[in-house]
Length: 205
Image (tube, rainbow, N blue to C red; front, side):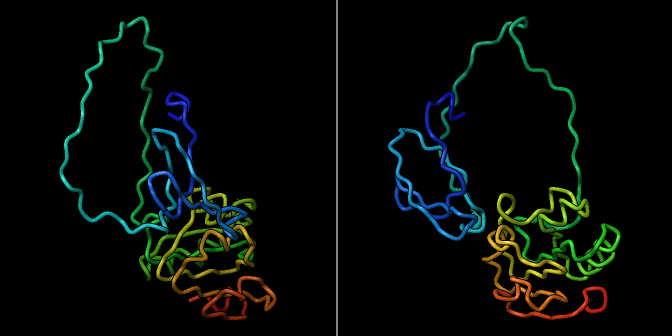
């Protein structure tokens, strides 16, 4: 889209200062910068955690442009199939409660055994650290961190997550952070509201 419009995209916008000025995070969320664009058309992506959800949409006029039909010989795209994965759990970005696991679980079976029952009790989304993904414990759809999903739930429970800077950048806006880790020196304890130094297999609810 930006190529066709000949404009520059601005990604991960946290604050819209005015029609031409925007603020976005840099350095894995540890700093921010202000960008100004004079492009006539603005193409931006927003950081969901920084904006309140829209509750109503006002009615307005939409300009509809009718395109001429395309000759069949000029069609270069063809629809093949559609595959959807349905889940009863809340979507990670918009969830009010999230339970996340890290490499401390040691394997996928242990991680599922801990997170799934806890998630069912809390009706929460399930997240994971980059280390857990790299170890094959979870899939990419559950990744929390930079680059990845930025979340801001009311409650974030981290189990066996040490707290790499990329992960902390992805969940630093959580209202209440609970951490369970047997390593008292884990960096995540420095930002946790409630910290439990214990073996996750014994202490997880």
